[in-house]
Image 1: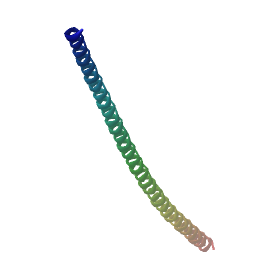
Image 2: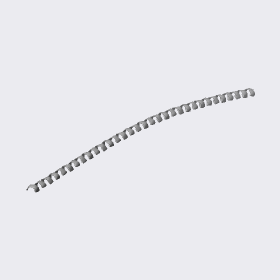
Image 3: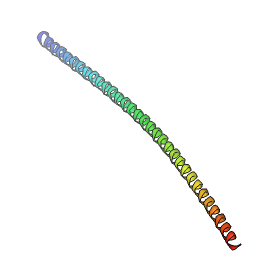
Image 4: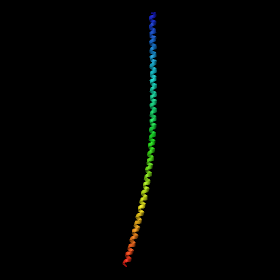
Length: 118
Protein backbone atom coordinates (compact mmCIF):
# COMPACT_ATOMS: atom_id res chain seq x y z
CA UNK A 1 0.00 0.00 0.00
CA UNK A 2 2.85 2.36 0.39
CA UNK A 3 3.40 4.47 -2.65
CA UNK A 4 0.01 4.02 -4.29
CA UNK A 5 -1.75 4.95 -1.12
CA UNK A 6 0.52 7.96 -0.59
CA UNK A 7 -0.05 9.07 -4.17
CA UNK A 8 -3.82 8.76 -3.74
CA UNK A 9 -3.71 10.78 -0.56
CA UNK A 10 -1.48 13.39 -2.14
CA UNK A 11 -3.89 13.64 -5.07
CA UNK A 12 -6.84 13.83 -2.71
CA UNK A 13 -5.08 16.53 -0.67
CA UNK A 14 -4.33 18.51 -3.80
CA UNK A 15 -7.95 18.15 -4.93
CA UNK A 16 -9.15 19.38 -1.53
CA UNK A 17 -6.78 22.35 -1.68
CA UNK A 18 -7.99 23.16 -5.20
CA UNK A 19 -11.61 22.87 -4.06
CA UNK A 20 -10.89 25.08 -1.05
CA UNK A 21 -9.19 27.65 -3.30
CA UNK A 22 -12.13 27.50 -5.70
CA UNK A 23 -14.59 27.93 -2.85
CA UNK A 24 -12.48 30.80 -1.53
CA UNK A 25 -12.49 32.42 -4.94
CA UNK A 26 -16.24 31.86 -5.10
CA UNK A 27 -16.67 33.51 -1.70
CA UNK A 28 -14.43 36.38 -2.78
CA UNK A 29 -16.45 36.78 -5.98
CA UNK A 30 -19.70 36.68 -4.00
CA UNK A 31 -18.42 39.31 -1.58
CA UNK A 32 -17.14 41.46 -4.45
CA UNK A 33 -20.53 41.16 -6.17
CA UNK A 34 -22.31 42.03 -2.93
CA UNK A 35 -20.01 45.04 -2.44
CA UNK A 36 -20.70 46.21 -5.98
CA UNK A 37 -24.44 45.79 -5.40
CA UNK A 38 -24.25 47.89 -2.22
CA UNK A 39 -22.22 50.53 -4.04
CA UNK A 40 -24.77 50.61 -6.87
CA UNK A 41 -27.62 50.85 -4.34
CA UNK A 42 -25.86 53.71 -2.54
CA UNK A 43 -25.22 55.51 -5.84
CA UNK A 44 -28.87 55.08 -6.86
CA UNK A 45 -30.01 56.34 -3.47
CA UNK A 46 -27.72 59.38 -3.75
CA UNK A 47 -29.01 60.09 -7.26
CA UNK A 48 -32.62 59.78 -6.10
CA UNK A 49 -31.96 62.15 -3.21
CA UNK A 50 -30.29 64.66 -5.52
CA UNK A 51 -33.25 64.43 -7.92
CA UNK A 52 -35.67 64.95 -5.02
CA UNK A 53 -33.68 68.00 -3.89
CA UNK A 54 -33.73 69.46 -7.40
CA UNK A 55 -37.46 68.80 -7.71
CA UNK A 56 -38.11 70.56 -4.39
CA UNK A 57 -35.92 73.47 -5.46
CA UNK A 58 -37.76 73.73 -8.78
CA UNK A 59 -41.10 73.58 -6.96
CA UNK A 60 -39.99 76.37 -4.61
CA UNK A 61 -38.86 78.52 -7.53
CA UNK A 62 -42.13 77.91 -9.38
CA UNK A 63 -44.14 78.77 -6.29
CA UNK A 64 -42.11 81.94 -5.77
CA UNK A 65 -42.55 82.91 -9.42
CA UNK A 66 -46.30 82.30 -9.17
CA UNK A 67 -46.44 84.51 -6.07
CA UNK A 68 -44.56 87.29 -7.84
CA UNK A 69 -46.84 86.96 -10.88
CA UNK A 70 -49.89 87.10 -8.60
CA UNK A 71 -48.54 90.21 -6.88
CA UNK A 72 -47.91 91.86 -10.24
CA UNK A 73 -51.40 90.96 -11.41
CA UNK A 74 -52.95 92.42 -8.24
CA UNK A 75 -50.84 95.57 -8.59
CA UNK A 76 -51.86 95.87 -12.23
CA UNK A 77 -55.51 95.38 -11.35
CA UNK A 78 -55.27 98.03 -8.63
CA UNK A 79 -53.59 100.45 -11.02
CA UNK A 80 -56.22 99.74 -13.66
CA UNK A 81 -58.97 100.20 -11.09
CA UNK A 82 -57.41 103.51 -10.03
CA UNK A 83 -57.19 104.66 -13.64
CA UNK A 84 -60.80 103.69 -14.30
CA UNK A 85 -61.90 105.49 -11.15
CA UNK A 86 -60.00 108.64 -12.14
CA UNK A 87 -61.38 108.48 -15.66
CA UNK A 88 -64.92 108.02 -14.36
CA UNK A 89 -64.51 110.96 -11.96
CA UNK A 90 -63.19 113.16 -14.79
CA UNK A 91 -66.11 112.15 -17.00
CA UNK A 92 -68.55 112.88 -14.17
CA UNK A 93 -67.03 116.33 -13.66
CA UNK A 94 -67.17 117.07 -17.39
CA UNK A 95 -70.79 115.94 -17.52
CA UNK A 96 -71.64 118.13 -14.51
CA UNK A 97 -69.83 121.05 -16.17
CA UNK A 98 -71.70 120.47 -19.42
CA UNK A 99 -75.01 120.25 -17.56
CA UNK A 100 -74.27 123.49 -15.71
CA UNK A 101 -73.31 125.19 -18.97
CA UNK A 102 -76.52 124.01 -20.61
CA UNK A 103 -78.55 125.20 -17.62
CA UNK A 104 -76.84 128.59 -17.64
CA UNK A 105 -77.23 128.93 -21.39
CA UNK A 106 -80.91 127.95 -21.22
CA UNK A 107 -81.50 130.40 -18.38
CA UNK A 108 -79.76 133.13 -20.32
CA UNK A 109 -81.76 132.43 -23.45
CA UNK A 110 -85.02 132.39 -21.50
CA UNK A 111 -84.11 135.70 -19.90
CA UNK A 112 -83.34 137.20 -23.29
CA UNK A 113 -86.59 135.89 -24.76
CA UNK A 114 -88.53 137.24 -21.78
CA UNK A 115 -86.88 140.64 -22.06
CA UNK A 116 -87.35 140.70 -25.79
CA UNK A 117 -91.05 139.91 -25.60
CA UNK A 118 -91.78 142.73 -23.11
